[in-house]
Length: 350
Image (cartoon, rainbow, N blue to C red; front, side):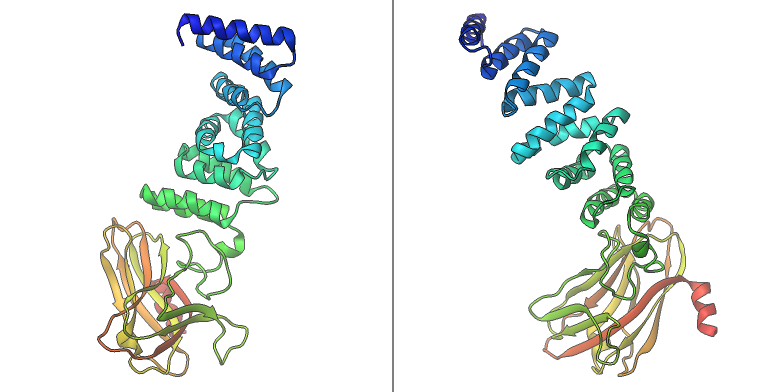
């Protein structure tokens, strides 16, 4: 607007207020004129009055959210954000960056936490935005505080933060965050690997098994015929299509290890069609590959490997190898874990 337009808008708004002193729109227009003129305090006073007159005046709420964030008035700013997001969730794309900025200040985090523990409808989307785009230390602090509350944090919420740390190649930090935020039962569910017993257990990606069933391959956690109530990994493969059947990422320091477990299959060719592969998450350097002789009874298998310096994270994959003909391949796996090589050798001698 030029000066003439501002003057006209101001005059019309003042006339509207004379006719209806409770006119929130007129107050907001006067606040906008004051803001554009550089009079922030007057604009804030007018916008605050407009907000009180009508909680549904989105423009005054948005202006106040931005103003109060810049002024460090975090409690009031979060209340504005809460009101806006409860009424217009689609505004989140523009509001979450402001909340991320609020999260960077200690007092701002306090105000945010007070709102988040009440489980507002916008919490999941905001935590995703904070984990993906917010200042990483502030995000970790908020997640850690929420983990100590009654409701804690969900697996999906943890996954976004952990995946971001992985993308930044901060593998040890990602593992530490996962251990700190996850329930004790999840953290204690495996050595080196999570949920080596293939239980019905939720853990944050990538510290969990990621299954890849397809039209031609079945991957499931279910009880085998000989062990009711004791789940295991069940693979039913057509022997033709290839690809990753199962994947988990782990973070191990440099050293020698043994990947162990038990398996069972009545398919003599299973070892040629299904193999475990251990590789570095970054760069894909293969550390070990193994297809094992199968037995109709549960049989122990071992796959030794060494994680070299610079291999900050490792991928554990179960692969289906493509062949030129279809053949039914069925296999069961259970009790998989990764142990330091000396410990695994010692245990094997007992």
